[in-house]
Length: 250
Image (cartoon, rainbow, N blue to C red; front, side, top):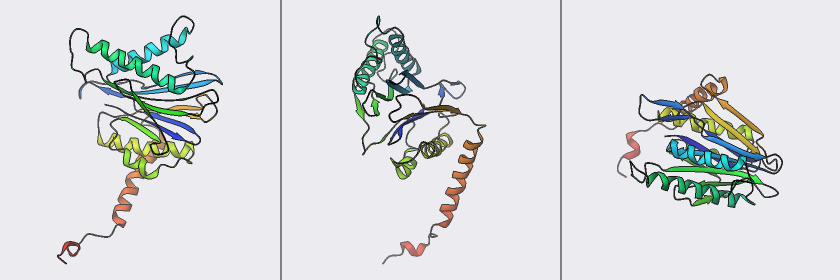
């Protein structure tokens, strides 16, 4: 399992992903689930992945291979004229990889090789755009009604984002919000874990403007984790106490 979030703000796009992969409680590894490609000043494209690790690595490798020698390899996301076309290329690649594995020798369960992706970026004078791509290769785009996407273990962290998200928030506040969401998820599910990769692509920059990794020794993450727990206890204790009088027949 995994947990990744892509969020659209007026200030740009924010991406955050955990790094834990596991094939059982005694087989846990760390893999980066965030990949980026760019042409400085012209385009930036970021991909977050969840699901079967072999599938996601194959998709990223194919995209990367096509991007390194644009003239000889096509189609390339570095030549696509819009983010919509990039989403189509990535969706087709994901679908083809899943079908290739599912139709090969050995295991044939349809869901075994599935993967879901979050794709975001900016090309030329176009706005920043954010997509969620499904195993079938189709996709949806973020809007004012759906300004963020989650993949993987989403249920624990979603209520926190829904309650506090604001499109006008700064990059710093978005990171704080997402760290609370990730901390809640990590505490609820052992299949999601640190370190956490963070990236921000400023609107109009067409570049990765901030990128860093947060591990369990990071003092700010520790402060967020303990502070959120304390804040929840304080809020709970401040609520009106329950009494059986509240349920007496009228």
